[in-house]
Image (cartoon, rainbow, N blue to C red):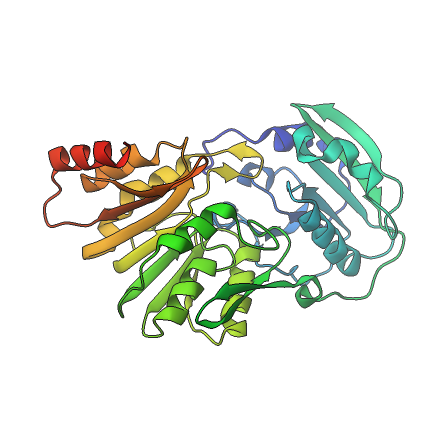
Length: 355
């Protein structure tokens, strides 16, 4: 995300209808585009996406809970997850005064066309302001301010069997990938990960922390760092660690930044969506930079949908890519940071792994 990129379709629609947005102290919720900051009366912004937050030019708050402050309205960029929408609206109902307007903007494929069917008290009737850019802009008003809520009110936990250990307790909040359990790809990766020796490990795009926590319980001397772009995911990961009496470093980022150290192991189920949109950029950046964040002989383990072009990127970076396992949807890949990347040997290894 950068200022030079065009605004998202919902933001374009919002700015075209700026004359309908009144209020002197608005809270922007989940805004993807920094270009909106100067065009509307935004007093603060609540970001759930670390990448979007770092480009916001004015006051911003990154976290799973709403910022403190007095606001006379809000603008909500609709997320794709219905449970997350429910959580955000419940947070706003406790934060805003009675009668406060909330403008909701989103792409039609995000569910905004049917949102009026799910909006209920304490929100009033939903009114459509405009359509455009395959998006809609709606407004509704809070009929009565609600009692404060806690993030813990929305916590869901699942027990994941991990013989011979006690089950791993997974925490999840609305908006976390695979909420409220574990996705099939990560489950497949867990079936093929070895038990690593003591060292350092990065769980990239960690979600609720299932990969790192699973490995750390097997080898308590592992020092695990958990990186994710989502404030909801990092909150869930922190709770997973607490429930399993584990320690770990939490990193809010959408990429492998240059200031990150090198690790002995990196594990991941890299994302390929940002919101509703297919977005290969996070996975591409991750795979092009993973090798430089691995110690000598360090290993990259990841799972991905088979149609994604990740093996080619791994091959370019590491000089080889081994396919450890696959089914009709996912594949597990392994690459090692060798002293000298042997492109020819890597290509043969990749060809063998695809047979």
